[in-house]
Every structure is written in C-alpha cells, then in structure tokens.
Length: 318
Image (cartoon, rainbow, N blue to C red; front, side, top):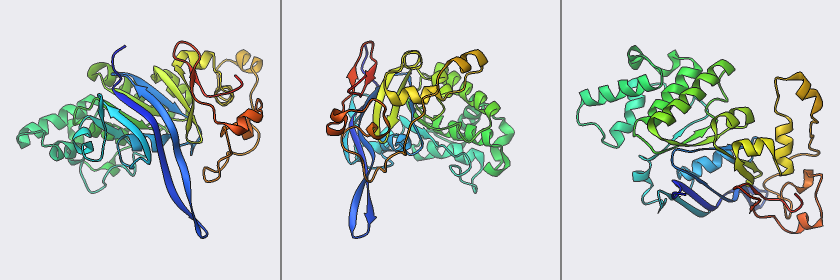
C-alpha cells in the first residue's frame, strides 16, 4: 500500500473553559488517529458535538492543536509551513449562507484563492480560470457578476466548492456540506463531489451525521463519540458488520425504504444522556450508555485494535 496522503496520530484539541474560579479543559478531540489515502474519501460520522468539525478545522490548523501529529504527503503540518500547504488542503464549510462574503461577487469569491497564492499571470487568465471552475460545479458564466444572496442554498454550496477547487488541492475537508440543503439538492451535490474526485483525483474527509450519505460517498468510515474514534472500517463492512455498541445503535436508527426489513430489525435505543466533555467519565467515554459495560470499562479507555481487514474497534467487550 502506498503512503497515505494525510496521517493523523494522537491528535488532541482542548479548549480552556472558565467554570467559576477554575479553568477546565473541554476535550473536543482526544487522542484521534487515522489516515486518508490519495484520491480516497474517508467518512467521519457521529452525534452533534462529538468533535467532527473540530477534527477537520484542526487538520487545516484553523485551530492550533493541543497535541499530536498531522502529516501531509509525508511532511509534518506546522504553523510555519501551513500557509504553503493550504494550497494543497482546502475546506468546504457547513453553512453556505455564512461562509460566503455578501459584499463580494461570485467571481471575486472564487478568484480570491487565486489572488492570495498568485496563480494567475493576468486578469484574462484569472477570468478564464474562474469560468472553468464555475463550469466544473455547474454554474453559468452569467452568474459571475452576481452576489451570494441571489443564489439558492445548493448554488451557494457550489460556489464554496469552486472556491476550494481554485488552487487545485489534493485534499478537501468537507464539513457537513449537504446538511443545510434540501434532499433533492443533496443528491446533486454528492454526485458532483464524486464526479470531481474521478476527474481531479482529490481526497476528501467527508464529515456528516447522515450515515446513508456517508455510506454512499465514502470508501471507509470512522465513527466518533465524545472526541474519540471508536470504530473505523470499510464502508460496506461497517454497515453490514458493526462491532462497537455505539455504531450498532447509529445504524439501527438509519431508515431503510423496505417495510419488511424495517419491521424485522430491532432498534437499539441508548439510555441516558451524552456526558459533558468538561466532565468526562473515567475509562471508556461510552460506558455510561453501554449495555455491555463492565468494571474494566470504568478503569481504562480501550485503544483501537484491528479485528481483521483493517476493521478497527475501541471496545473491551466486543
């Protein structure tokens, strides 16, 4: 197997939070390890607040990581070289309404990365590049002079994707890029991501909480719970043979358009609430809601272990 494009080892991202007279550490991302291959899509799923977006932002050093190592193309990503590396790593933000400057035309929004990295020799070359990018994402040339508020949510997300593609990146963090869109528009944008990957060979970290969408677009899926990755496996393998109790619960809630299958399967309901990341339980973070929890789960947090064929799980009892 060739060297991964992105390697993340023991990544931690803690935020200091004042609580009375004390400062507590909010452990948004706690000891996360994974990799993304060239031209691969890794899906990252979990409940809201589990740290998915923080992982994506920390990879691009929009947040300065508390600890851990991030390598891109074999080189460590540091505060000193991130400016140059951002040409190779880009991000599509979750909200297409707030991630675009309302005072800039579409042409200027897409052209800004070209200006920052000095990728065009003159205005004519810049204009041609912008129109090419717009055609990639299904926008017309006449849209170039318009402003973001004149477009629908799906069109705005296409503008954000064209902006990310402007510098010809090898890796894009897609932070819930379809969650704010209607279902019919979601399908169009997902198909566009797949077409662009086939055409340009770009790799994605696809962050979402919709397992059906992630299963469709991803080669592998990582499941997060309270800042930790609890399971990583091939997309089909994870859906057909989940091992971690949390993954089983997530998959049991996915709607299946077959009434016979729906009636036959059993929904796994989790008891209790998600613990506060300010006051994490000892040992395994999931043990307070797990039906298989034992004394060992309270004493020590399980590490990701390979169960065969690259299927990694962090659980003592499964």
